[in-house]
Image (tube, rainbow, N blue to C red):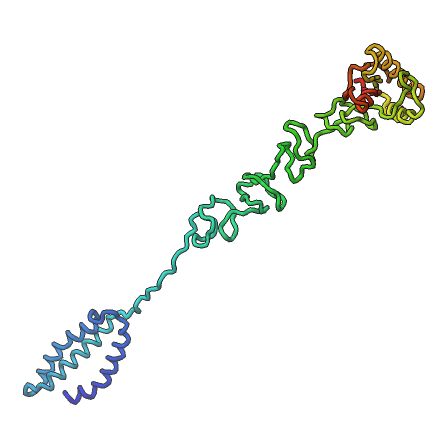
Length: 324
């Protein structure tokens, strides 16, 4: 028996090591079927060893125990399921994007961006025109670079005329005055005087207006106290004739005015005569009589003071008023 066991010991031990090493991955070897089989195999091994000995040889019993343990362990090893130990992999921290703008919170320089608002790589709402107002709040997109804007992203309009300051060619327009696209007061009759200042609207094109927007004939002279026209006045009067010819439907009233020197009655008569003389010149040189009328106003409608020579010179005038 001993000889037989010895002959089988090395092969059996090798198989046992191979089987055991294959199950070394078990975390709890105490619960393996191989160990349980080995323990169970000890009992029958000891019994068999004792019966085969002639005189209770302890060596035979020991050999039986060892053999039973080995055989039981081998049998039990076939029931073991050798599974590799699960490897615990540390999970990377999850980056949150609380406002859903596509930029994680730890990189987001503008948290709490409203949903759906386009943002840049910093997580801030876009400002396409660079005016400091985000696109989602900008009421005036595409403002030129460098233009001052208000909280709504719109350029300033200091005079409230509806034309932004950077486009306004006439800043400081009074409130309520109608302006053109440049921000300048409208001048309907193109006489160089804005409508809100024009005391004589409707001045025809080509007519020369004074600061009031009125058609005053500068350079028309008469002898003192008389109504005869001096020759140096003819070029100015001829210009008026040209305007009348170009505008056949235009009708004018020739108005005579004097200063306050002399009596009011004499000034009234003189103003009427001078107005009539000018009207007759126009008619004589090609203007239709249907376009012409005249009236004298004497000293009643001054445009400057009569206390100075300069003022009286302005008050002595011939003025043309379009008749509508």
